[in-house]
Image (cartoon, rainbow, N blue to C red; front, side, top):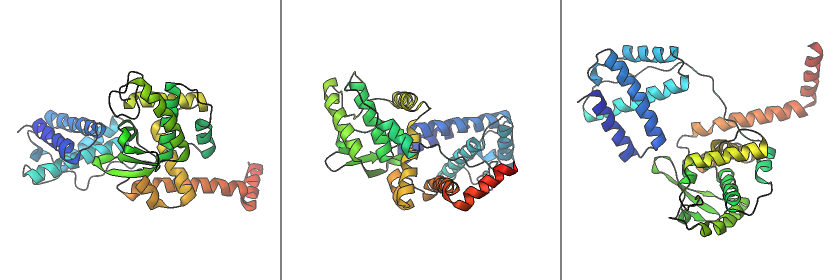
Amino acid sequence: MTLETEVQAYLRQLRSVRQVSPHTLDAYRRDLRKVGAFCAARELQDWSALQASHVRQLIAEQHRQGQSSRSLARLLSSLRGLYRHLNAEGTCRHDPTVGITPPRREKRLPKVLDTDRAMQLLDGAVEDDFIALRDQAMLELFYSSGLRLSELVGLDLPQLDLSEGLVRVNGKGGKVRVVPVGRKAREALRAWMAQRSLANPRDDALFISRKGTRLGERAVQLRVGRAGAQELGQHLHPHMLRHSFASHMLESSQDLRAVQELLGHADIGTTQIYTHLDFQHLSKVYDQAHPRARRSAKNRDQEE
């Protein structure tokens, strides 16, 4: 079997067994193509020939070419996954990625809207037409329930229970979770669904175009971006609304486990990034409110 044949077999397993998203699958494919090109340039004929020294060389080359630490970490993760598959299939008996880590990167905190900016985005006047009511419903649902972009565009009518204020979400890896839908979001969704029925929907998709077809991810990104530019004068993307939901929930509740469940994170370590955001908020409040903090800041200004 060729290098590419075994990669394709691994990708098929990811798609059919693990049910990874198309976006993740494309990322794995790109990463493993880089490794395959590296092997071909060195005349490594099969995956058993790739050694740890080769992997270190590959990472160093990619780093010199400007690849970020995050991209290199994902490449290593893709390669580790491939070798787990090859070992399970009996094709290889080693894993050349063991003990190899990418260059350390600075932890970047996600960008969020503060509560005032979130209210500014959502509380403006909404025109009584198809596009405006649909976009308002999408924005409200993103912020109300912390949905991923793929989760929102994949929603069908039966997944939404407005009387109970719940939505059943198909998350990553086929995992299903049920999350609350807030009052404002329910109001916006009811107004939208009255308009939706006039567009001759082609299926049960919750969010559709004027032609009755399901909205795709790119279309939603563009509409959210337009709302950010018009209402806030800034760049806005769907994940920023998810980040804002998580940060505001944690700030109010201090319940990390609950936020983890609402977001659908498999690992609580992923959710913990929002504790850093919360600490930043608390630090800012302290600096503004504490007498000693104010005085020391004033003194620093005088010294400068």
